[in-house]
Length: 98
Image (cartoon, rainbow, N blue to C red):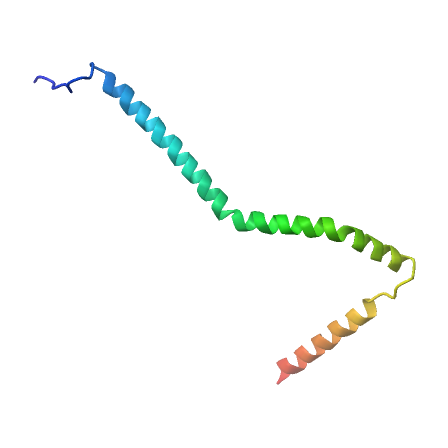
């Protein structure tokens, strides 16, 4: 059987064309996958940026308040938090018994 050849192409040139096309499609596919990863992680990256902002902005205020509490200039909220937690637990347990 005689092999038919494409007019205008030298023998073996189709291999170079096929490999170049495969490489171009692979690169395009990788760029698409990378773009999709950035888009899907966009919400997470946004939330991380907001958390970083609050961390930077609120750190001096928290340090100042902790210093004042440790010096005894502000009353601690421990007893109020304990009371609220105990009252909530008691209400929950009474409702569960009904």
